[in-house]
Length: 250
Ligand code: NAP
Image (cartoon, rainbow, N blue to C red; front, side):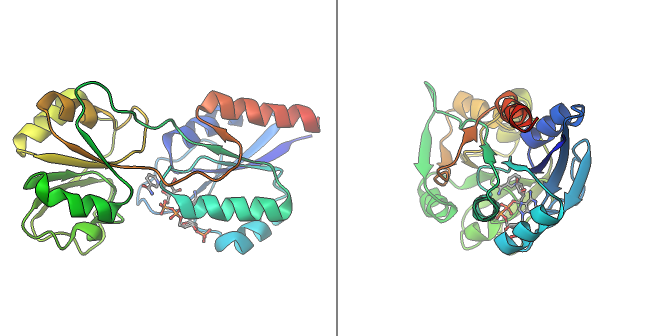
């Protein structure tokens, strides 16, 4: 019997898990992307794109597709889709696993300023410097739009949604990034402060090493609280969870 898994994606780990499961004849995996990025990096295997229409839509979709289990491997800050998945899986009675990479933790020499939200990050910035490297993604740059006295280097995969701060330079780029590259960028733009979400993972952590080496403060937006459901932090753990389901059903 094939176990049909819906894999909510949009992250490196989701692509890695899809690649790990796609060769297993006992598993049929369908990866789902929100469709936000213009040229997404597509996972291996079957892929669908676009929202489901909330929990109600997801309930209909998993029933129509005879899904047996859901792995939510979305980004730690994509909380709406996680709550949609929690509601839908509880209604249908489907097993749900959240796969989230581990958070970044501060080390010796780091000057992190933890905040709970992007508005809190915006409120803190004026006292930390005039030239800001903003790496929180393209969707909520508007939170910083009123900070007209500061200069922003905004790095995102696609152009940021307006409005953006008056003094903004946009850098379109996608990781992985290197420490040497990040050091050069911070120096070239005479950056005073870095703003980032606590996304975790190695793809974009070089900016933290670079900021430490230059003694720059990092405004670190903490993750929202996780729902109380089973959680994995590595692709291998999530793969074992799926394999255990396969054994149960077999
Ligand atoms: P979100 O606020 O949690 O989700 C908003 C809505 O978008 C959801 O309710 C759902 O629509 C749809 N959606 C989100 N992820 C989906 C998926 N994987 N498959 C199908 N529909 C999805 O999400 P977001 O913060 O906009 O992030 C969108 C995607 O980008 C996520 O898949 C996430 O993994 C990825 N991403 C996000 C961030 C970030 O910082 N937020 C960073 C890197 C990657 P319906 O309610 O209509 O189903």
